[in-house]
Amino acid sequence: MIQRGIALFFVLMLLSLSTVLHAEESKPATTSAATSVSSPAATPAATQTPATSAVTPAATPPDVKPVLNTGDTAWMLVSSALVLLMIPGLAFFYGGMVRQKNVLSTMMHSFVAMGIVGVQWAVIGYSLAFAPDMNGMGLIGNFSKVMLDGLIIMKDAASGAVEWALFQNYAKEPGAIPELVFAMYQCMFAMITVALISGAMAERVKFSAYCIFVLLWTTLVYDPLAHWVWMTDGWLFKKGALDFAGGTVVHLSSGISALAFLSFLGKRHGFPHERMAPHNLPLTLLGVGLLWFGWFGFNAGSAIVGVNTSDAAGGLAGLAFATTTIAPAAAGLSWMIAEWIHSGKPSALGFGSGVVAGLVVITPAAGFVQPGAALLMGIAAGIVCYGGVLLKAKLKYDDSLDAFGVHGIGGTFGAILTGVFATVGATGLIAGNAKQLMTQLIAVVAAGAYAVIVTLIISFVLDKTIGLRVEKEDEIIGLDQTQHSESGYNM
Amino acid sequence: MKLIEAIIKPFKLDEVKDALNEIGIEGITVSEVKGFGRQKGHTELYRGAEYVVDFIPKIKLELAVSDDLVAKVIDVIEKTAKTGRIGDGKIFVIPMEDAIRIRTGERGNDAI
Image 1: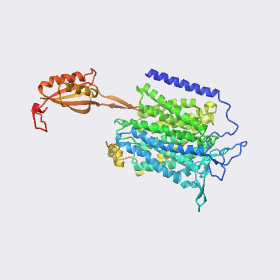
Image 2: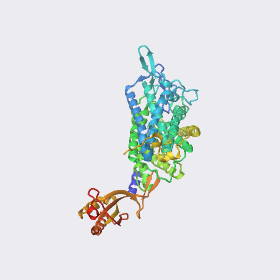
Image 3: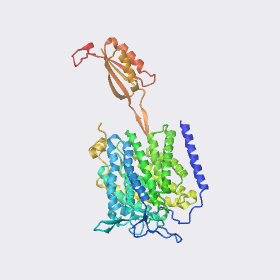
Image 4: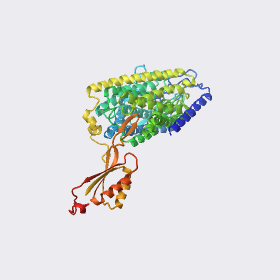
């Protein structure tokens, strides 16, 4: 069986390699006349003021006024709902992996993030991330869109007549969606990012400390990072860092923050000698399914900020949809096969984890790479992240559900590989652009360092004030009972 | 009278029960138990974290039988529960002082 697995693995490798090489040969002389913009353009603009793109070389067509595109709007509404569904998906994914006594508390970590960030985003988060720059340094947005101000333009207060502010991604084309839809789409990203961190804290974090952490981390880490990378004013955006759907902003930042938080939180009581096996892997696999399903909104929806296009529901979304199918499929297999060879059995948890690893790795690259590259990236994702979680067993740190092993390592790996494999709308190393790889490395280091430092400060302050952990006795009884006065299963 | 206690592999339960029925045994108490003997446990692996499961699930049968049936019952259990592989289980025979049928108050052999 193992030999057959190895054979299959190599066939996959060869297939994907040949596809990439082929794509390389037949690649037309790109860098089309239009522009040299090499990153997604996020330019929220009101109806009255035609938006100006970040980089506008002289000989380009003039900017055009945004016009509402109903097809794009429909797709973005659906995408937003799809991304929201990833959060219950994550709750199942994580919930199945903890012990029975902690299933509700672990699921609550994801659910309460929907509550806290949903409110935070409307009040201040969207403004900090996507309002015009506060001080011209590209670090954070100003307060002009607090309470989503300006997204509804009041025409006549007496009759209630309004106009909708439009989000026009690419100033050379008219296609636009209501900025409210864009704001809500981005809201779902903020919700799930902080929830990803909870995987590292499961089974011992104090609920009150977690809730405050969610609010502080989203405000102080996520919102600035989203501004840096996705907003036209952001300094990493201006540097041309590529992050299609959130490899740096979402996965790298949450994964590495998980590790930073752990330095104050410490290990679970009894780790690693006590048995801490997943209590319900079917829940976890259900979560994998929901995550993959929702991820089509996450990645294909991110075509809304694609390069040189105003189409949210067009070819670019199709490409992101394809890579989001191929990479996790390959990663599920490669993790499974790596585990099969390394430890003797192909596990269900291994396949599911591989799928998630593949999704994480393809996220920053989803609309920049071709299917062959997605296949290679997926294969690599499964093997690298399998190595990542084994590292935990070796180093004995207690990242309960591998938030760092999968999202930290996968997010970093994906962001770097994007600089290698990008050929669509941007160029990476294999297209002869070594500079892009450097830019990606700068983005990874800057975002990682910022996330680590601020998370360390937040964790330190919470640890010294209200404390991060529950009492030892409460931990042993279980968080469901001690934090929530409930139990997951009354059968 | 003897109390016969047999620890067997769970998948053998139906076979053993049918065989005991055939020789006229009218009551068995069955429990799901866990333990280890020479078979030892097994290991489970979750994302590289290895856990040894020391106790493996078994079925415990308890039946009270009159002295004349003891040999036959032991023989039947031994034959039907046997796979020849390690972990087939054990049979214990324990002397029993009395038995009482609660509904009628019958005692001794009449009660079993």
